[in-house]
Amino acid sequence: MTLLSRVDAPPSWRRIAFISDLHLGADTPRTQARLLAWWADCAADALFILGDLFEAWVGDDALSLPYAAALRAALARDGRPVYFQHGNRDFLLGSAFGWSLLAEHCLLRAFGAEVLLVHGDAQCLDDAAYQSFRAQVRGAAWQEAFLQRPLSERLQVAAQMRDASQRTQSAQRHAGLPFAEPDTSACLTILSESSCSLLVHGHTHRPGCFDLGDGRQRLVLSDWDFEAAEEPRGDCLIWSAEGWQRRAVWG
Image (tube, rainbow, N blue to C red; front, side):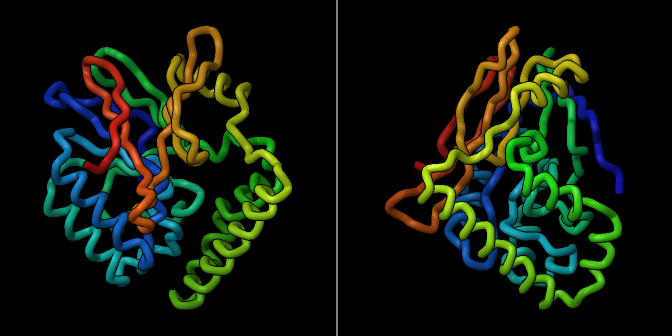
């Protein structure tokens, strides 16, 4: 599996769309429908998904699940290029969708400028428990053993992990504890290594533009949630020769 650490946009591209953290699954039909409706209407030439498109991706045989098969069929019919970067929920996604897969750090060059793309979880160094878990599940031995289990069993394990994560987050909120944010030093280090001044990522569900000093910034994507119709949430970033724009993905 080839992971692209650099993408050079062709001159024909005029607009590039970025999304992350949709957390799709069998129980998110409204969010998936919103994704497909938005992308059908979006005038971008390419789509970059910066991780956690799925709530859990337990292996490419999950493409047999109806929601996943429907998503692949719809995006394949569209025909525009899709680039995918693994998140903390869908790091097991391989070639199932036929998308171009990005490395953990990917430099995108377009419109005479450069931007560094990451999911964002690896930079949240204050969450020591997660970083330990991340090191384990990103290892080849763990992944090989996990993928040998039956699909039904892997889905059950993923559901248990999701429930445990939700309990932890609820406890943190109840205790008034802050959620981990990307470590500034870690962000500056990867920007310096890439000779880049702008970092674009998801993961934190806290969209905005954050100053890192010395003319460097991180631009954060929103998560999506359209299951509660009275409180829809979601936006995208559009990059063009005119710069960056944040846009809602409904209405």
